[in-house]
Length: 181
Image (cartoon, rainbow, N blue to C red):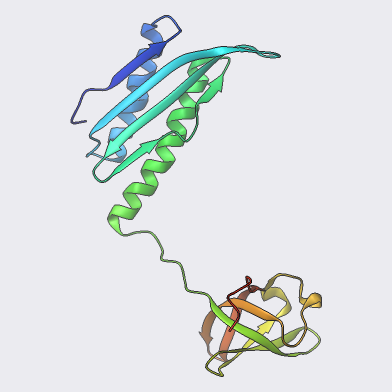
């Protein structure tokens, strides 16, 4: 880490055991990403919960080049060590996503093709796109609405694939309003 780890205790007494736990979790994050710029952890007692009693809240802000990663909400639990673990788990997942993006390992989303159902048979049918290309689809490839609810002329969007048998439509869904061809 470029800057030293910052641990703040708010409305709760400072604990060497909790701070050691936090430092151990932060060290694990550094094994995932060696260019963490800073990490700030806040431990607080937000108040008493009606049914659970005293809850500890942990929030983490982590800075890496070009991005700030934070636990998306304050992780609360009766056991401060569980709250620390949950907060670091959330930040770890987001840091892993950041590292994958930096390495170019994220899979780009396929663009959806828009078309209309032009024919329906018992368990399959065909969709035509704006260019007049027809795509085969079957019952299993229809996500929403169900295959039985489709009608000829229904505007749909789908993932297009080129298979050995020709063009195929996968993950067929009802087109969002305003996106019909």
